[in-house]
Image 1: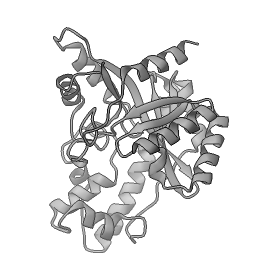
Image 2: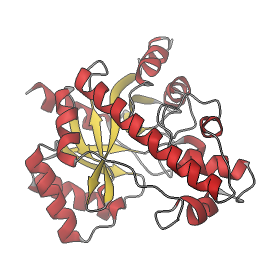
Image 3: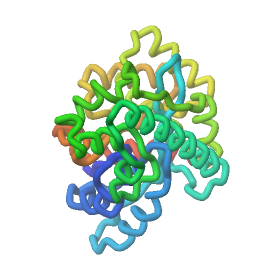
Image 4: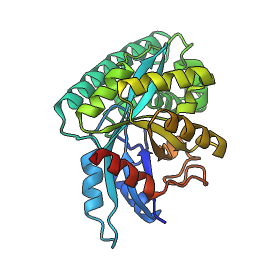
Length: 285
């Protein structure tokens, strides 16, 4: 049986592998397809596709164009995965450009707050020579550790950039309805990423899924690194109850999440290629 991974991140957001390195990893891991789903950016997709096209293996590695959009839900953010999106779609590109500028302004405010408190950083330090189009809190964490302001990223999140920190600035998010609409406008399928990571009580999670289904949600990411067998079955049941599709991914970030490997998560994740086949059949209807 062939396996896939429909949730991986590159250096264009908060992963530590370039798109080409992701392709090489997926190939050596024996995967038949991956979806590059960077946070709020699609800039790495063309490089992943080019790297996959240059492989000399007998079986080609498929690159599913994707994106992970952050959306506002009750003073928190939830993530909507877009799979099979068209990277050339103008509406999606424009929305991502706006989100990128909003994120940059938020980052500048956080940099100023940190500087005022005696912890100066620069935008260049956040970028750290990377290709990242989407600079987020993990970039802050690494830069603060590099400056010697904290011993590790866990301390940074606790002291400097956690939501209760005086240096934290909340981001501006689009609505879940707009996120789903953008993905559909780009020809993609929209999935609620890692539903159990939001730690919602069961009735609220089910209410959220019902609401998102009304907005046009395509499916749930039921197969995920941290899900137990019982978790997966519960999410499969919710998907079936709401007429939704199933997706699966490791949420691979390279050394930023060192316990997660591409395709296998913590070692026991397996996403069969039949999942991808079902999604393609649903798209063709």
